[in-house]
Image (cartoon, rainbow, N blue to C red; front, top):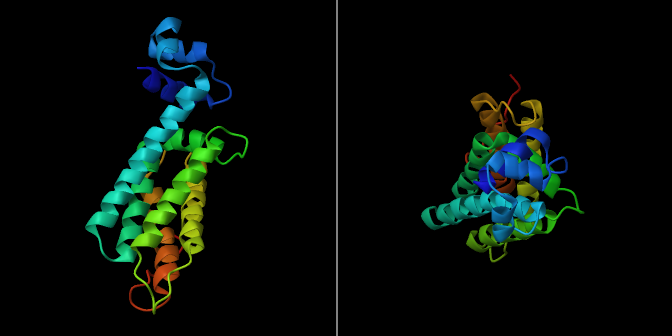
Length: 196
């Protein structure tokens, strides 16, 4: 109940403008109950953010177990990220934006998630002529995915009205970036995403 209430008020007003009292009202619980489970609003923010990132990490782990092709693995990770943005658009916009701030309590966790995803992807990618792909390539693709998703959410009323067309647009752009980054050129590189 606390996390649902918090998600509602954070989505409506952002992280900074919300107080513990606002969360209590939205969740319909007492202050005593809140403090039995959480020490502060920041603990609730972190719990919500971790729920989303844990969901993303699990989907990517599954993709890596089920797929052997690195492009297909990355595609499934992109799809998992976009599913989160589609399902929780406004909350992803608010918490994801906060996590980009170096002073945010979420920033360190964001960096840990990036490192985990980069480790997953780079350890699963086959060697190319005895050379391992530079992990910075995967990190750059992840940052591009975050950035493209952020632009989409901003254009879709800050995540309030995410459309299937917007999700598909980001997917096309990210598949071009990801396939070009991993495959370089040839038939396995996604086509250029033309503007509509």
